[in-house]
Image (cartoon, rainbow, N blue to C red; front, side, top):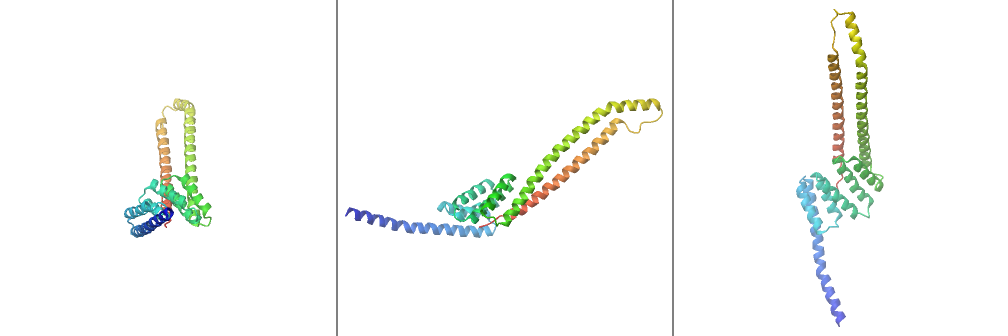
Length: 241
């Protein structure tokens, strides 16, 4: 008799909880749909709030977490974006292609943060899961080129400093000798005026070197803008659900 009563009570409890669970799931879907609508209208803040409600109702909702990451990305909340994408990847254990999309977007976010090495590693993870993704392959190639250019720029800067130091050393070594030659020439030709003093020559040389440095800085700025434009093109390709 007692066993019958216990089973009956459990049956009633399950019967009461089932409609609640179904209702909660409907609320999750409803908030996701509303969030998608706001997202398409580029109301990213409102979309994020609706996705957050869906996550609060069901923390295991892959779609809600992924879409929330996208909405945060559009608001430039980089750290929160990465957190949501990582959570989504931890939930997506069945479909490697979908998990790859999460890594792709992490790569885009790291690129926004100018963390090129981490961006490259994220794209590599995406390709391991989905080797057929040409978009990710292209982004990886772009980031690798940016890293290579950055390393070359740093190396070139060191070489320029070394060359400049060598030139200064040579000038210091040659200066006493040239001073003596100037004195001898003036002694032999006292009536001939100096065409250019050593101070004027040094000032002219410094002006030329300054122009060269400014030219190099302008070239570096042009390269930086090109990299930023390429990065912006990559960000526009950010994958959506």
